[in-house]
Length: 547
Image (cartoon, one colour):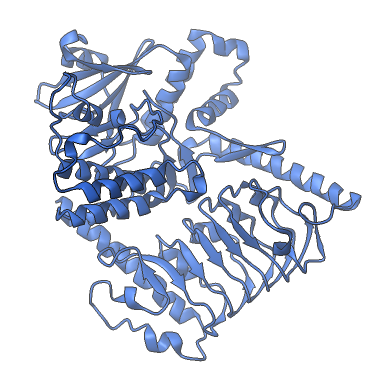
C-alpha cells in the first residue's frame, strides 16, 4: 500500500511539473524557436523533461524541477504564472528577455521555495511586490534594468538570508529598507535618482516623513493582520513582527497566547492564577476538538488502565515537560503516554502541539495520536517506538559493552533523519517547521530501526572530539565515515549562510549510502503533504523545544 502511495505521489509531482513547463512554452513568444525545437513533450520516458534546455531536476528518478535557467533566449511575453505548478522550484532565471507587465503581486505563492530569482534586463513595470518578503529562503534577487517604479518595500528588511539584491537602472524612489545583513553595496541601487538612505545619501526631511508614516502603517497593518490570523490559528502563524528597528520571531506558543489573551481579555494578574490557565486550556481544547480530525481525545480512565495506574514498571523516561509511560491497550496496541508537569507554559505548549503537530504525517516524524485532559492533568499520546532512542544505541550503559549498531544501520538512520527534516523544511508546502532541538535522544527507532523525529531532545553542541565511534574504524567504511562527518560539520557551521538546506543534506547522505551498496528509498521523501494549515499562505514556524 505504501509503495502505491509513493508511486502516486511521484507521478503527481511529474504531472504538475510537466504542466508547469508546458505552460511556460505556451505562454511565451519564442521568435528564435529555442523552446519549440528543444522542449518536446511527445515522450513518455521517465524524467524526459530533465534533459530540456535550461531545466535542472532535483534527481533523475524523482522528476521534480529544481531550476529553470532560460536567460538570453529572446523570449517575449509576461511573467509565466504556470510556474506555480513547479512546486519544488528553487531557482529561476528569466533575465535578458523582453518580458513586460507587472511582477505578480502573489509571487511568493507562485515561487514559495525560491532561493535565486533573476528577472533583470526585462521591461517589467509597476511596483516591486511586497510579498517577495514572504519568500523566506531567498538568497539572491536581481531586478536591475527594468522599468520598476515606486518604493522598495520596507518588508524586504525581513529577508534574513538575502546576499545579493540589485535594482540598478529602474525608476525607484524613497528610503531603502533596513536590511538585516547591512551588506548590500551602494552600486546595487545605482541609477535610481529617488532612492536614499544607507548606504546611499541621507534622506531629506520630506522623505523621512514619508518613511515614518509608511513604516508606521506597515507595523500597524502587520499587527492587524496578526490579530486576524490569530483568530484562526491553524490557518497560519505570523512569522515576524517589527519591534522598533529589530525583528523578533514568534513561536507557536507565543502566538497561541496572543490569541487567547485577545479572545478572553485576560489581565496579567489573571494569568498568574491556576484557575485561569485551566480555563484557557479547556477553551483551547474545545477548538482543538473541532479542528483536529487526526488527533483523538482519550479518556483518563483508559490511559490509567493501559499504564497500570502509571506504574513504575511502565515508566520509560522523564524529560523537561513530563514523564513518559508505556501503555498497553486491550487490543494489543502499544502507545507511549506523556504525562505533562503542571505548568502554565506547558499548557501553552500542549495546545500548540495538538493544533500544529497533530496533523503532520511522515514516515520519519513521530505521529501524535491523541490527548487527554483530566482536571489539571494533561497527557499526550504517541505511537510507541520499541527500539527506544538513538542515544542509547550509541552509548551503552555498561562500560566496555560493544555498541550494537552497525555502520549500515547508522547510515540508514542518518538518511531517514535527513529525509524527515527535508520534508519538514521543504515539502510541507503550507508550513515550514524548523525543529531547533535535534539530538540523538529525540530520534526514536521503530522495530525496523526507521528513525522518527520527536521533540524530546535536549540538544547541546559538542566539539568534534569523539565524534567518530572508534569501534567503526578499520571495518571498510573509513572514507564514508569521514564524508558523513563532513556533512555533519556543514550543518553546524557557525555562519548560518554556509549551512546547506535539508534537501541537500539528504541528497549528500543518500549518496554516501548508495556508495555502501545499501537500498535506495529516495521516493520516501515524496510523501503526501499532510500539513496542519489550510490557508494558501506559506509561513515558517519555529517548533520550540518540547520535552
